Image (cartoon, rainbow, N blue to C red; front, side, top):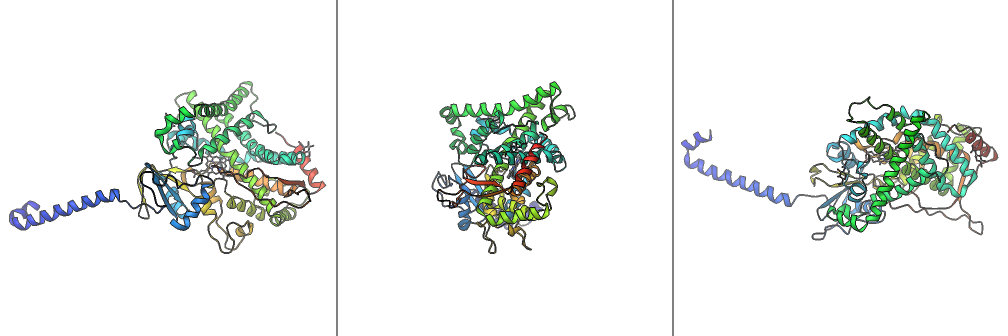
Length: 518
Ligand code: HEM
Ligand SMILES: *[C@@H]1O[C@H](CO)[C@@H](O)[C@H](O)[C@H]1NC(C)=O
Ligand SMILES: CC(=O)N[C@H]1CO[C@H](CO)[C@@H](O)[C@@H]1O
């Protein structure tokens, strides 16, 4: 058709062709320029070359990033030396990207130190969204869905009772008691191991490894994470530290697995996730060999301790802080328990659902100081566009859970601890919708975690009064809690007084602990 016209109207066609070519050129030029002039989300002014490198807050970064929300809004862009970070300060933005665009937003950042050098890139939380990760999620779903975890109710109740026992025995060591309880639940579920005391070999080894890991995983912890080019330098300068990390992780993964295998060979292995999976080799033809299968279980089961113990500990200890700081909320929760359950027994998992104030107290704990204030970061698989902003491939995406949970609320100010905000006719958003993550990566342990947190906190409320420590004059000391600046942010060491509410309550705790079947 173009040719026919050119024969008929050579001159007009010539003009048209030139016009066409010129506009094509303009489009090309515009495309080229816009490559360099892409519209990025707002962020702090950047310096040449290093960009915002020095702007990322190094301590408790969620606080600084939440401050930026006032200046730059719900989506904040940072960049420097080839890295880009997008901070999402709003639940709607998080859901639109991490959930609805899950195909793009579900990878994890490549962590050079803890991931590649120490080898944790094979753990469930750090795997990219690949086939191995899908297998991990499948195994986790099998073992941790709401129905499957019913068989752990008694274990969880037992552990809550033992916590009380240890609080009766030694209230001064309460942080260790909470740590032990959180670790015990995971060990029982994953391996059928029943840890005896805080000094139990496995728990203390795992705690040491977790401290190393969470410190290394907070964004900005290691220069080599931001600049992979520095990886060889890091492994050279910090060779001892890296090797120590590798040893700890390998020990942590292999020891309990070996324990289960030995017990299985002797025919005395208690039921557990690992036992179950090891016994079902061959049910799935997705594995080439027994070794490959065991290696997947080794990493998947080991990841559960890493992901589940520290988080559960953080929530329960934060609840203790809240009880000490807010005696009225504590008293109201206790009187609900006394009214609904009575004073003649301790709460059981069956009571979940009939204690609305206690559940509001737990929600408020998770909102007031979320265990993972920046969730677990994501990485984009390809370029994307959101609200007209360009988000390049490989961008680290930080869901700012702290900003979401501290969203302005005129009736119930966000920094005040007010469980009633969840009982309002127009209640606050349930923190379960943002503290356990989003989309395909959502926490697979959340049902187990909610049960653990419920039974530990309700048993604690039923049996004990928690109050501030008294100073030498007998005046209560104001508790001003500080929180760890890590991936998991739990309360730093603090003092408080934990006393049985009555002689009867004390006896119940002791009797319940005696009945433990572990
Ligand atoms: C109150 C306690 C807990 C909290 C607040 C919590 C929170 C989270 C969050 C925020 C994530 C990241 C999800 C995302 O990227 O969107 C996550 C991932 C994960 N959680 Fe939990 N969690 C808790 C307890 C547990 C427990 C008890 C287990 C195991 C028994 C567990 C296992 C995992 C695993 C394996 C992942 C990695 C999932 C993946 O990357 O695909 N968590 N959790
Ligand atoms: C983990 O990192 C190492 C070292 O860079 C790499 O060889 C390996 O393929 C990575 N594994 C996974 C699952 O990404
Ligand atoms: C079963 C069990 O360990 N019960 C203990 C609860 O706590 C008291 C101390 O307050 C111990 O004496 C019990 O043995």
